Image (tube, rainbow, N blue to C red; front, side, top):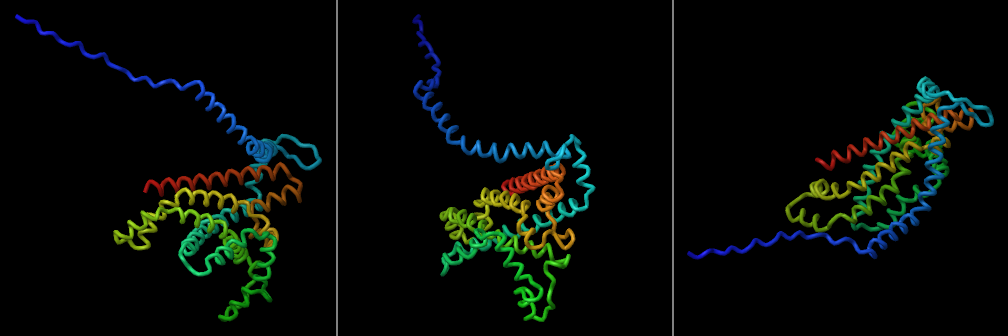
Length: 314
């Protein structure tokens, strides 16, 4: 009877990940240090001109501080007084309405114009420059030009409408048209930057995907919805955030053209903050209003983020 010899099973080998060499760890640490050194100027700038002023404004919002006077801690008194203040309520409503109208309209127009400028057309450089000029022009100069356009006696707006038989309008003096008139200027002035950003994004859309969609028989609208629009997602959010911040901080346009009038029909938050802080010298009250505006901007940015996520999921 012969015994069967069994071969021993090979021992299980476990592959161990080699530990990084000492030189590699040194290289990583040196890269991290170099990164912090490069970030240091930006962090220092943000700390001095952003973080510290914001913290200071939040602290002042709980006081009754005025320039050169004694101050006392008043807690949430400024915030409760804010919502009883008629000027603040008007400024809050006007600012939200201004943002709700200007942001989507300017983004839609900018994207539409960028799509047109992305085509091979004559005079492309001229049109790109023409749309961008208002962005780099001083707002005071733009406001002065539009004051002439809206002039009820000799302005271009009434002169143009008179060709079609319309009666002259008091554009900036009438409560019904003052804020819409400012919205039109804000939309026009903000087109240039958005157009340039959208143009850069459109030129980065994959040509292969567009050609594949065309070969499959997709129409222009189908190519835009299924190829171009998804590719613009991150750019859309960037444009939205910058538009929200810029729109809520509108000041010089309103200050030069209407100074918040007639009445409080065009008073916005930054203008009201300026009047409370530097005209009425109520710095604590103005700081509380600033904190409310920062929270409002954060809420709008959060809503924009949720809309972007919902669009991506769809």
